[in-house]
Length: 413
Ligand code: HAM
Image 1 (cartoon, rainbow, N blue to C red):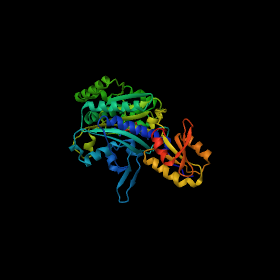
Image 2 (tube, rainbow, N blue to C red; image 1 turned 90 degrees about the vertical axis):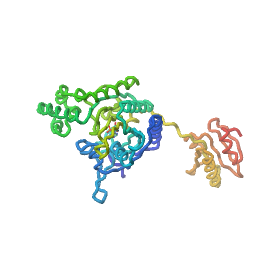
Image 3 (cartoon, protein in one colour; image 1 turned 60 degrees about the horizontal axis):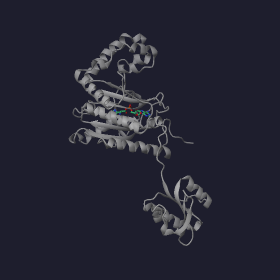
């Protein structure tokens, strides 16, 4: 039997109904703050991610699904959506619109990671990006919107970790300082950390090796090296979050897996999730548009994993889909009448289903009960149907043309 590829999954109807709730809540919460929906292609030039996400990241180094387009150009299934949105911002001249341009998305993403609970090779993100504003209010507003979404979906056990990475200059000076520190302690570091001192020294904070962790307790912290402007920006973001009553934990070692971040970064985790605890995260990326050959343009945003939100909101109930009418057949020769009645009912705005499996009348009524049909019309002879109220179990005969008006009147003949 052919199965879905490892790390991918089918979205079955019950799950699709839950996801619809996620989509509706995202639209409601972000729409209320003026964010408008955008969709970008599933694949992009590989170069977009190599430049945007960063050559040194795990994503670019080993997790991208890249392929030749047949004409010698390398394309990649998007591992994330921020770089594509910045590409679209530039391609469509969105700098001419009122700034910031506020966008939200619901998109599939692809990363070749080893699959486990909450970590897949195709997964879905909802996200928001505000491009063209460096105001700390933008950062704080986005964090509040993500907190609101997680709350609205009932995501349990959430915590917010917050930090600031400063500007690229501060960061590169700090990287040198950290490299010097790591080199001085090389003998005490895990092999993987030692191997990445030059390429990605910040990842040392992420290590789960005990000796490395002991070394890192004395390591210099970027947050102590921020210049005045960045420190002031971060202080304002924090003050706004404090005013909004959003609890957070300052985490100066917060490492995000993407290289484009500047200034504010954050991540919501959930205690319900185990190892893959990051439910949604984001940050400011004031240099990204320039990296993609655009003019200096600040930006900030977040993305949250739909599967992880649903895992951590285990009791998210999708509203039952109502069935107003089930059209049953008393005799097999009533098929055409039944077909027409179901169609007319739908045109009148009802959710109407038709018997399609050749069941006995008893079987049809049982089925109608199982799908929670509110009414059953049993099509009989000579233009007459029996209309059965599935709540009270009362039934009466009526002319076929009265079936729909009666249901629309709530059962009054
Ligand atoms: P990210 O932290 O890489 O950020 O991903 C955001 C969320 O996507 C994660 O918090 C997680 O819930 C979900 N996620 C990531 N990888 C997987 C996976 N393999 N399986 C299931 N879920 C996963 C970004 O992608 C940035 N673009 C966020 C951003 C937007 N920053 C600024 N704007």
